[in-house]
Length: 366
Ligand code: ADP
Image (cartoon, rainbow, N blue to C red; front, side, top):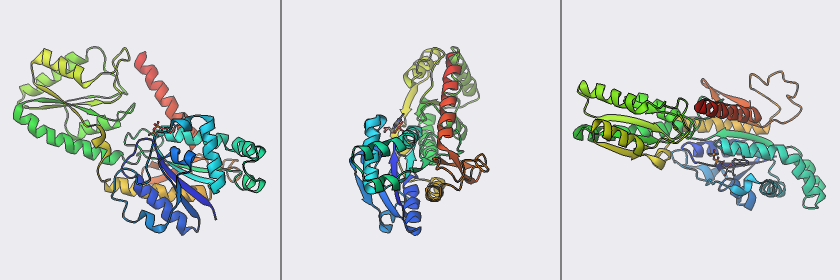
């Protein structure tokens, strides 16, 4: 009988509740104890933890946000903070942890995993935990689930929440197009995504936008001319409105952020068109999850429990046949590959994400 804890951390995303539901139901079905860790890593440090029952997660799959709360927790960024969290986990005998969050949350989980053995030894030496508990919790079994509207996990085709966010963006823009058409206006729509252009680019295609800015390919200094040329040419063919999508992390060739106000001013000065800025903001994270995000959350939550329960069964293509299989627990992340949920080593996923971000920054400033 294990104690399996689940938390949501960082930015919330639609579908997290489905994942929490599957974690709890599968954990209980396997005969283990399940713990709801509230408010992300903050709850892990303060001990804001409840033992979950089957009924805790009745009627939650259709809800957006995170029913167990999430947070940004600066204290968890420190070794002392993570050691406090470890002490709480030893006290509650929670040695299996499922973290649902974005890349920051997964990085925090990886650090806890790396320091776990040392924390156990120190806490025992300091007389804060018994030898029996220290031995029982020798290994931290850890699984990560990527919950983020940004879809910025390099190893997973989809993160939980990105499908719903895209639906929200498309719906909002469909509404804007009608009013834009009536007044012959241009709308600059600012969308989320941080350093990842997935939301900006795919939404632009789906709503037939006239121009898109996204961080992976930063616009060169001639963007105002190119943009205005594009607007002029589609207006010539009778188009009465224009939609321009501006991704969140877009910078110019000098690394300066390009904002909606700047885009608006360039168009108004050069073309004399009426321009409005629409910042969709947190509406993108709101609302009920789509079917795809519900299903993805449920599947990943289920797989994460199987993963921490029997971590020696490594399923990723890369890890099969690895000499470490069956000898040591390796923290893993649930990833969607095509139609399948696969597991990838957490440290590898973090490394890949860091490398991709560094390469992008390098390219942007070259
Ligand atoms: P997201 O998980 O959505 O990317 P953040 O980047 O804000 O969101 O991370 C969420 C939380 O994860 C942070 O508030 C912090 O508690 C923890 N975290 C993030 N980065 C680290 C890090 N490098 N070391 C330890 N903990 C971290």
